[in-house]
Length: 351
Picture (cartoon, rainbow, N blue to C red):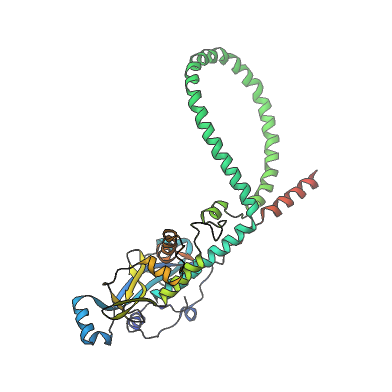
């Protein structure tokens, strides 16, 4: 985010004229680990461009086929826990070119997942046991549902008999309760003493930060690279970087080369076509073909699952506009095997 500048009339005008001015984020203040970035607006602004004065281009512009634009992102630096509630009316607002913002946030997202999956691999045995236990619980729940249906009829028949037995047993139970009450009080005192000791031991266990195995599977951390349907994040990220740098498409419109970049949309950002190598002369006259673009840039063999690629592309490009981004360092998780060994050693010492 080093290319972001504090939001002001001057910085906004500089973005429109493509001039580099204003203070950078790192010169303004340091962003702490407890803070985050929350997008407030994505704006596509009209800009002045001398190319629009040429005869043919002027006619296209007048017809609405071409316009000179720049897309910018306005984001707010806020306390990460409260970023959701920020509405852009406070302080610490910054502006940055859309292409620079997407390149930075997509790279961050891929690096975060890579770090997370590396730790999933480190604790694969632990997560395999978790998955087996989860499957067993699911099977048990299914069996319980079936047993419940079978028992429903039997319970109805037994209800009448139980009512009679309850009346006969009420008097006996009253006497037993009086006798047991005193014993229960004594046992409760003993149990409270034991629980206090267990709570002290349990506090250390609750402080442990184990990896979320469910997320390991949902992020497909255990999927093989050549597995059918698996998406290579490096390829998708490289494709995004090509777009943020204004990529050649090999297509033409009215004898002019067509380039692919990004533009603001209702969902944050989307692919757009331009008629210049800086991706400022936007045109709406060429249909976007995502599959063609990706395969031309990253998948020449044409063997990628394009639905999966398109979905991952949308996550990386549009996700940062929907959710705040934490500025904290990547999380490190505790090793459950080491904790288990420590618990065994403690138990042996107690014995």
